[in-house]
Image (tube, rainbow, N blue to C red; front, side, top):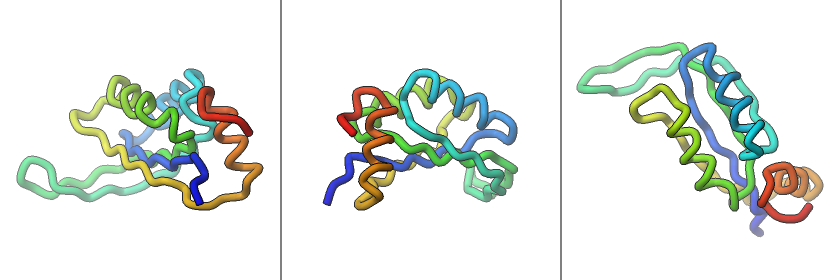
Length: 109
């Protein structure tokens, strides 16, 4: 079963997540963005780094995914931003319809 909906995870510097989320929503690249504070540990340039970040959980349509990724790369302050997209294999049909409808170009509800 294919829903046509994608959940995209993006991390951003703490305090920058809301600004990024608002731009994404204003441009109708997503229907909804949740923001949660996270502590990230990761390898960067040969050593382990640790940062407090905002985790954006973005719900959009599969049809808007490429444009969303391109726009996040343009707006994001990191050299290589985390952008992970996971297909939604099942969800409440009304919710998936709403996501596709709100992310313009994503299909009918």
